[in-house]
Image (cartoon, rainbow, N blue to C red; front, top):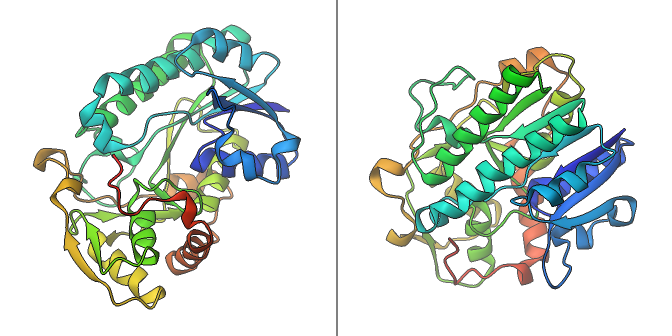
Amino acid sequence: MKVLITGAAGFIGSHLTELLVKEGYDVKAFVRYNSKNSWGWLESSLVKNDVEIISGDIRDFDSVSNALKDCKAVFHLAALIGIPYSYVSPKAYIETNITGTYNVLQASKDFELEQVLITSTSETYGSAQYVPIDENHPMVGQSPYSATKIAADHLSISFYRSFNLPVKIVRPFNTYGPRQSARAIIPTIISQIFSGKDSLSIGNLTPTRDLTFVKDTCNGFLEIFKSEKLFGEITNIGMGQEISINDLVTKILKLTESKKSIETDNNRIRPDNSEVERLMCNNSKLIDSTSWKPAYDLDKGLIETIDWLKQNMNNYKPDIYNV
């Protein structure tokens, strides 16, 4: 089966591309056009010669439609995801996350695709009103980023209900692992440790997150895709465990045998009403509906991430705050 992956050059997208190639799928990788013709993380991937790489812009309907020709399914991961930058340029998130999702949905409808997997985010839930968070939890847009993802999810479900488009909403909780951008908390911590800084500059230490290793997240995507159920529905991917940012920093310091101190950086703290204080996944729907079973606990995943970052520090700028 030929499938298209949008956002294939990114963190989760590149891992998912590798998994689907390994599983025998014929993969087309949609990456954002740039003058350097860079394929992001696929540049160093062992499967880059096994996929058809197409450059385009998710905001442009024609390039999305052309990429979807002769495909049977699409995994839509292309998005703007940095929460801090969504405060700076909300319009960019509207154009990419909402219009980009519309382009995928409309082109998928035009070509009568067999499956359309739309990537959501646990940020759509806002701060937990109860835990663990199941798929019936209210959605609350606490940042422009999360608001655009909520809109994209509702638009996707509307295409399922209005046109019978075979949509599935995949909602990962916080994913981490090799290749994650420096804006995320785990590479922020690890890269600062290896940079030689005397102390770590961290934002709010009290929020809790449910952390899933990237290979387990990608296996969740594949299991949802393989399921004969879940059409027109949302499915969480997460571990069902939570850890505070403070405890996460402490754990990483221990795993790296570092004794660095922690300093609070106000530039890294979200506005009060925008901070998502608690996230913890109810993954019973995924477990009951598929064969998904995580292979990584937090320590195992962190060790693999630490080892990778240690070898790839040239990709990170720990002294610069990334929005």
